[in-house]
Amino acid sequence: MDAIDILRKLKDKGVRFTPQRQAILEFLLATESHPTAEEIYQHVKAKFPGVSLGTIYNTLNMLKEHGHILELSYGDMSSRFDGNPDNHYHIVCSKCGRVVDFHRPLLEVDQEAEEISGFRIIGHRMEFYGLCPECRQGEMN
Ligand code: ZN
Ligand code: MN
Image (cartoon, protein in one colour):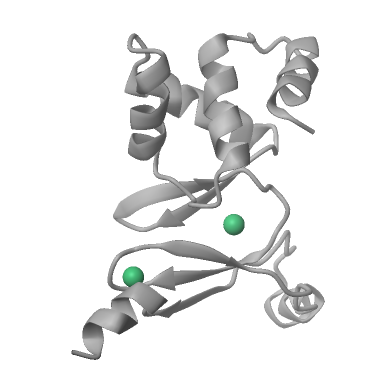
């Protein structure tokens, strides 16, 4: 589904379709960089100088609530946003903060976690930490 299909579907549910929202979603679907809200704002502002950071946050929350994007939260650090809403794993650079996808079949551990904890498990998240190739390069000097 492209941005317009997603926004048309949302419009049927009563969500307002705006060119700014289209630009936000198009950017997220096109990038693999897992941008922060601030980075999305800077990108969209180049085309729509009147857009506010509030509009960016509202749109991201709305898209997340409807299951079209993922928010990767990192405690006190800025969340990053992912235009691929299907669960997948990530590798995070501890030095520069870069986040890349790590595609592999999902571990089938939810059932085990449910049995051990008594929680009703709705999903799991897995991330690897380390130094990205560029940051490794810097370490070798
Ligand atoms: Zn790095
Ligand atoms: Mn991702």
